[in-house]
Image (tube, rainbow, N blue to C red; front, side, top):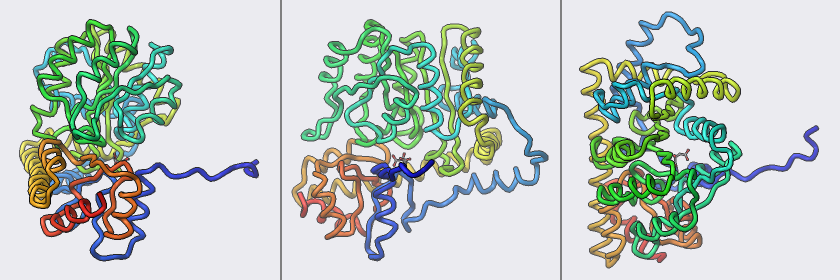
Length: 397
Ligand code: LMR
């Protein structure tokens, strides 16, 4: 049976993660995979999570199944956190949601739902986009296309080109995949003014928004990070939202995410939820519970919630501080464009104008690991190694 089976290469992110792990040089700098690291280079379990887990361990009485749409309290809590508990789509019951196996599970479940309602639609993704967006969404059988987004010379968003391209190429009923905040891999987000233009543009052209909000809370702050999503919900009748607690609760391996369909009526929201359940049943049956139980515990307990909010602020603040340090180091060493970009960009990632060969030289000559595309995870640096990092990048450019 397996005689004809050929090995498949790893996805680029996993490949760099493994290469860095195997490098024994002590001074290596790991800017590869998108996980938050503290000053010592560790990805620690949040204190709020540890405390919630201890409580949950004492309280949990059963491991029986939760159901195909998972923990609904978790979905409600995350939606209230992101949209505000008194948002009309929540009070009017116009959100149908399911817990999922991480943000990737959310993206796939959302794509499967889109395949049911719009089998001939094209899903348009930014150039570039997260390496796994295209495999995850196209595996549901949907066609995909790319719109211009990041300009590797200006290191900013080509917003007019994005609108022109969608205007010329996307047809009514097509889907536009948008990064709600902390664009992965570039860190270049739309400004509030650009979201204000994008939402009516999409309404006029009959385009449907599919928002990936995997990095909520890690950009500029909770209100800023949900601005684009809220604008889309305000202007457009329907939105699909994929969320994750991998980064903001540091629950990576617990695979904790959700998918939410914001619909025009509460009846349609119930139907969307039943579809999520039926689709999830045939792919993985039911999502894992532990991460969702922990998030709910944290968000429903005033003191735990405060601890988590502080931890989220710390993670976001540390990445902002590192951005400022790197920006300063680039500036001092003559890298003005990169200096401006890393300061203006948001979240974990920036994409620097490196070729794959230059990224390889960074690895072999300087023990600095970033993606061949030039994507770096700023959280992997620290105040001590930032000057060396800037020097190494400028040396290979
Ligand atoms: C990343 O972009 O590095 C993260 O989202 C991890 C992953 O699964 O790719």
